[in-house]
Length: 205
Image (cartoon, rainbow, N blue to C red; front, side):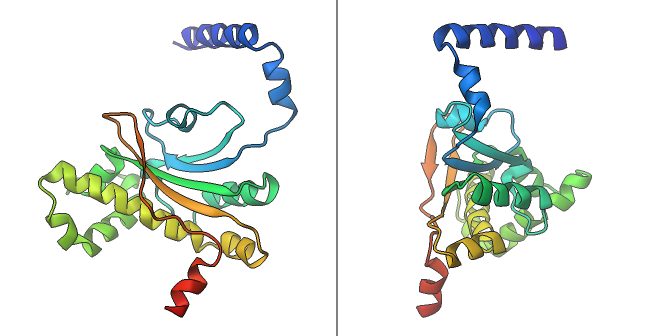
C-alpha cells in the first residue's frame, strides 16, 4: 500500500513538473495563502480540492466534525500562526452535510474519546431542539445541526483573544461559515460572516 502511494506521488510530481516547470522550486521558497480553513477531518472534504485551490493557497486545520474548542491549543496555535505570521485575512469554518461526527453526536451509543470531543454539538442539539424538530427526517435534522455547528464555530473563532486583539489593532480579518454538500460537491455560504466591529455593533443594539 505504501509503495503504491509513493508511486502515485512520483507520477503526480513528474506530471506537475512537466506541466509547470519550476513549480516546486517556487513553492518551496515561501507560503502565502489567502485563506485559513478550519474543516472536518473527513477524507471526502479536502480543503484544496473542494475549494479548487492549489497547494500554497490555503492554510488548513482539520478535526472531527470541525468543532471549535476554546481550549484546543492545536487549533489556537494554527489560528495565531495564520493571523500573525502568514497575515491571512480570510478565515473559513467549513462543515459538511452527512458528517459522521454530527451523526455520532446524535446517537445514544458509546464512541470513546469522540464523545468528549463532540459534546459541544450535543449542547447545540439541546439548545435548538425545537428548530431541529421541524425538519422532515433524521438526515435533515443532522444536516441542519451541521450548519448550526458551523455558525457556532464562526462565533467561537471570533471570540478568541487572537481575533479580538487583531480587530482591536485595526486588522481587517473576516470569519466565514461554509457548508459542503457531499452529494453535489458544492460549497454554500451560511451568511454568518463576522468581521471588524461586529461585537461593537451587537453591543450597541
